[in-house]
Image 1 (tube, rainbow, N blue to C red):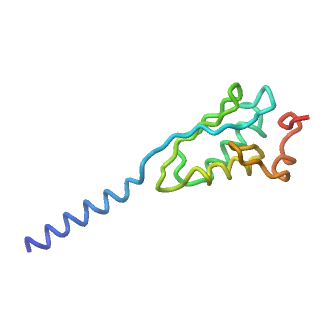
Image 2 (cartoon, rainbow, N blue to C red; image 1 turned 45 degrees about the horizontal axis):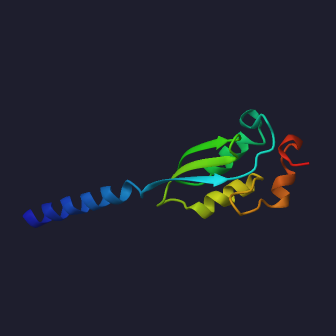
Image 3 (cartoon, helix red, strand yellow; image 1 turned 90 degrees about the vertical axis):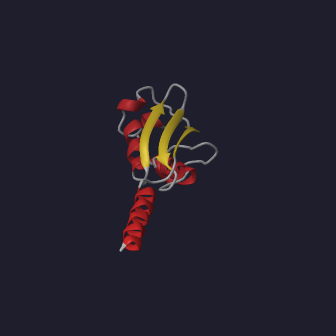
Length: 115
C-alpha cells in the first residue's frame, strides 16, 4: 500500500512537471514594414498577429514598425523559431533572411507593399 501511494505521488509529480510546458523564449525578428499606419492596418499588424498566433505556444507578439521588428515570446516545447518565421512569411512579410513568398506579398493591401 505504501509503495502504491509513493508510486502515485511520483506519477502525479511527473505528469504535472511535463504539463507545464517548456521554457519560454523571446526572439526579435527583423522584417520590413512599408506602411506608416501598420498597427491599424488589417494587412499589417493584425495580419502578422493572426498568422503568428496560429502557431501553438505563442505567448506574446509585438510588432514595431519604427524598428521593423517583430518580437515574439513563445513556449519552446510547442513551437520553434523556424515555424514563427514561416508564419510571418505566410502573412506576406520577410522574417530575418527568410523571404516571404510572392503569393503572400501579393495578397497584402497596396500600402503594405514596396513600390
